[in-house]
Length: 466
Image (cartoon, rainbow, N blue to C red):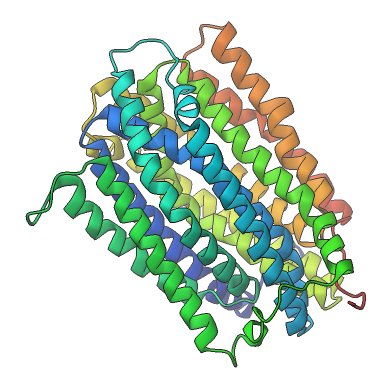
C-alpha cells in the first residue's frame, strides 16, 4: 500500500516545492480572472447586447493570445531545459526567438482585425432571432475591438518577459505585475464604464480603455524588474545587442515549436468555431456561455497552474538528463492536479446558480448560464488530467504528438460533433454542450497510453550550440 501511495503521491517536501512554484501563479491568474469576471459583470449589467459584443471580440482576440502562447511555449520548452543546465546564453537565444515571432503575430492580428473585424463579428450574430438587438451587438463589438488593438503590443512584451521568467522558475514578479495591473484595470473600468467621479459614461469603450492601460502597466513592471535585476536574470545581459540566434537552435525550435504553434492556433480557432456553433441557438446563448466561461475561468486557475508546474519541473529535469525523476514528477503532479480539480468541482456546483444573478439579464439567459456552469464543473477533473498530461508530453519536445492529441482531435472530433448537432438536430444547446465535453473522454484514454509508454521522455538541449 505504501509503495502505491509513494508512486502517486509525494512527501511533504515535494508538495512544499510544488506549492512554492504554483501558488504565485494561482494567485496571479485567480486575481486576473476574478477581476476579469468583475469587469465582465460590469459590462453585463449594462445589457446583453454590450456583453455579447465584448464576448465575441474577446473570443476572436483569444485566437491571437493562443498563437502567442504557442510561439512562446515552443521556445519555452528549450528555455526551461537550458535553464536546467545553467546555460544563460541558450536562454538568451530563446528570448530573442520569442520576441521576434510574437511581434510578427501581433502585426498580422492587427491587420486582420482592421481589414475584416466587422465580418468576423457578424459570424456570431447569425443565429435564430431571440429578441436581441443584433445591430447593437455589432456596433458595441466594433467599438471595443478598435480600442483593444492598442493593447496588443504591451501584452506581447509582457508575455515574452513573464513567460521567460516562469520558464526559469521565477513566478513571483509576474504575479505582482499581474495583480497590480488587474486592480488598475478594475478601477479604471468602474470609473469609465459607469461615468463615476465626473468622468463620461463610456460603456464598452471604458472597459477596453481600462484593459489597455493595465496591459501597459504590467509590461512596464515586468520589463523594468527583469533588466534591473541583471544578476538574477543573467540572460537579459546583452539580449538586445543583436537579434542573432544560432541556425541549428533556430531550426530545432522551429521543428519542435511549429507543431505547438500550429496546435495552439488551431485549438484557439477551434474554440472560436465551437462558440459559433453554439451561437446558432441564439445570441442569448452567446451571453450565457460568456457568463459560464468567465466564472469557470476563475476556478480553473487552481489546477491549470499545475500545467505550468509540469512544464517547468519536468522540463528542467529532462534538461538535466534525469529522465526517471521526470516521469515520477509528472505522475505525481498529474494526480495532484486531478485531486485539486475534484475539490474545486464541488465548490462550483454549489455556487453555480448564484453567479448568473450578478448579471443584468433575463431569466432564460441566467438559467442557461447556470446549467453551463454545472456541466463545466462536472468535467473539471477530466480537463485537469488532460491539461497536465498535455504539458508533460510537451515538455520532452514531442510537439507533433501534442499537435495530434490536441488540435487535430478538436477539428476531427469535437467540432464535427458540435457542428452536426447544432445544425442538423433539434437538440437543446445544453445537450450539445454536454456531448462536446463528453467527447474528450476519448483523449483521456489516448493521454494515459502516451504517458505510460514514456515516449515523451527526451532531453532536447544536450547538443552543443553553434
